[in-house]
Image (cartoon, rainbow, N blue to C red; front, side):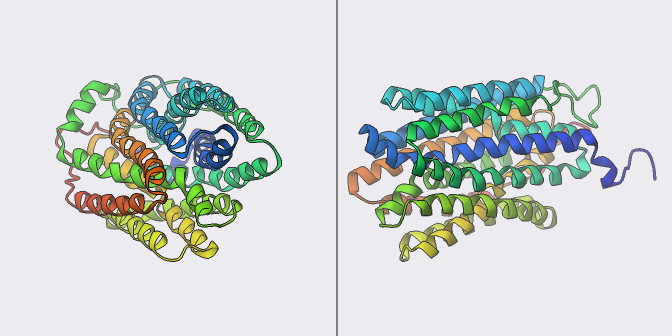
Length: 410
């Protein structure tokens, strides 16, 4: 076998495995905490007098800060590596949760909204997938990213029930302080990341991140634009569920512990769905798999919202949504890498993710607003269905061909 065609087993270097484990733990912590914040809606509303719409707006601000912060954090990680970015993100995460524990409206928006949003941008997929993509050889890159996205979802399976247990035993303020400590611990994991932005297999002439040039090329690619527009629906649907599912469950008269169990189901089934999506994308094409994720997620939402809501149906909904939750990451990552290469992945994912987070902002805020104005979530559920159907049609029209000269040699 020639020197430049190693077997897949040899491509899994000790450095790659170490970074994969550390990145998975960071992603698990970041996403687990982020997706558990909806559990604080009812305790904070009852304990502080903050309205559902106000809490929803704060979470909407968080997602908007995440969206605008993602291109910046991604570009910094492309240029300097992920170590410093993740360390900064961990500090911002801890500070934001501490402010949120103060219980004032200003602290909720500044901490739980702005700072946590920027922190998630620095400690989630836009940075971590880029870190992994640059040290994984092209032959195993898709599998490495799928493994990261799958393993990174397991934190939700642990952290959501753990957070509910804290809320049952302690005050919501003390529970947030426990999460603050957990967020700060991500600093210890960041030391395992490389401190530069070099890409495995790239030539010296192409291994120079240039975010502005890469973004200019990407926005002229119709496939990138279409995928970004469709990604709006992903944020709109998922963040509505993450923010408002606990309140919807309580509205239906079901026990509060069911919310944590449903979120845990999302976490465990997400690990399975993400691996399946990565494998299916390699076989049938990432564009098609991405469209199927949108359509099946929309069907799951419609069935849950307009059929009788029970303990069993809620857990089934959590499992279905989990299977389809972050399963978008492998196909989206593969499409960006195939069209543009891995050198500027963080910046390109970040710009596209901004569309996702604009959808997330509207999903979190309009969900709360519709509840306060109408007394239920009917309008919000219908909005999720319409947006999901449109995203499916848009995604199917995507041109995923790489343009000559846009993909660095690897």
